[in-house]
Image 1 (cartoon, one colour):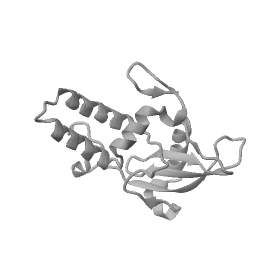
Image 2 (spheres, one colour):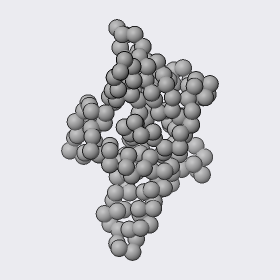
Image 3 (cartoon, one colour):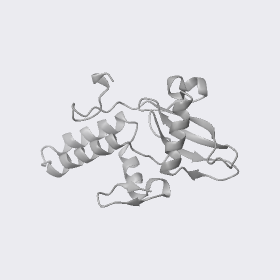
Length: 169
């Protein structure tokens, strides 16, 4: 990663700026079913699937965490992240409205670090910390509204919160 691409507030913990791509994909959810049509948001910089939703047969259902991981492995195995437009994916600067965000472990750590800055901020410094947070979110293709949605809902309706507030299956 190029240092100029680091969106982290800590140079020792670099986080790549997101390069979000979205489009449609057929994915086999289990070995016993036919592939279903999905809409996906794929960060080719990391690479990982940020959000995905089944949109077939009149149903719209968000992927769970394990399904996101399975789809990520499938896309990486096919090397989609090297030429996403050749696979029909298009760039998107931020998450589409339908997408329920998911965050990588490094992104969660950065958000926790910025939350610490917010807690310690004085009236004089709060605006600069909020600007830092907004720049980080913009760097990963998210907004503060995406954070609110992720905090209000378990990751894609699956899992539970542990004592640290993180979701697990």
